[in-house]
Length: 355
Image (cartoon, rainbow, N blue to C red; front, side, top):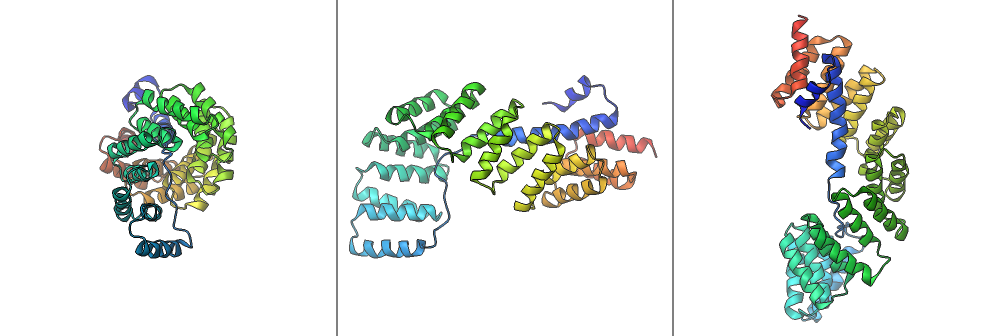
C-alpha cells in the first residue's frame, strides 16, 4: 500500500490524516507478521530433559562397548539435535549412515538437521532417499510436502500430502499442510475447511487453531476469538495467540477487551513493543488518556529505539497535550530515522506554521 495514495483518496484534515496513518500502521502489522507466513511444521527443538545428561552418558557408555552400532549413533544424533548441538549431531548421523545406509529413519533425522540449519536443498535430497527406502513413511512425505510449500511449489506439496493421506486418512498434520497450501493460494474456504479437519483429528493442534483464528479474523468473523482462545488453552504463554487476539479486538473496535488482552500479553512478555505501541494507539485515539499513551509509546521506543511509528505516536500525544516542543522533537526523530516518513513531515510543518 503506497502512502501517497491514501492522501489522494481521502480528503481529510491534516490531523485526521495523521491519525488515519497511525491506525493503518497498527493494522498492517498483523497482516505482515501473521497472514503471509509459512508455518513450519518441522519438529520443534525442545529443551534438554532433566535426565538428558544421564541419557547421554548411557549412550556414550554403550558406544564404547559397541562402536559399530549404527542405531546408537542415530540415538545420540537425535539427542544432540534436541540439545541444539548440530555439529555433533551431524557427525553422529554421518557415522550411523557409514555403518548402515539402509535405514530410512536415519535420512529422516538427517533431513531435520539440514532443515534446521537452512540447507533446504540437502534436506530435500535426504527426504527423497528416505522415501526411496520407505515409500509409505508419512513423516518423510509430509516433510517433503512442507519443503515444497516453503518454496511455494503448491502442486508438488499437495502431491505428497495426498500420498500421506492415502496411508492414513486421519493424519491431522496432512490436513494442516493442505490448509497452509490453500491459504497461500488464497482459497480461504478450503483453507478453513482443512484446518477444521486438522483440529477434528487432533484437538490439541495449536498451530491449526492459530491459523483458523487468522483466517477468520481476515473475514472479520467473531469465530476468531474462540479459535485464539482454544490456542491459548493449549499454550497459555503463547505471545502469538495473545497478540492476535488483542489485534482482533482492536480491529473490531472492542477496545476494552483489546487493552485487557494486550495487558495479559505484557505480563508474559513485558518487552513486547507491538503490544505497547497498540495500547498507546488505543489510549491516544479512543480514550484520550494521554499520560498512559505516553508511557506505552515510550516503552515501545525503549525496546526498539528506531521504532518510527512509536516516536510519531508519542509526538501526536505530546501535541494533543499542548506540548509542542516535545512533539516537534519526536517528529524530528521520526524524520531522522526515516527521512521519507510523510506523516511526521506533515505534522512538523503544521507545528511550524503555528509558531
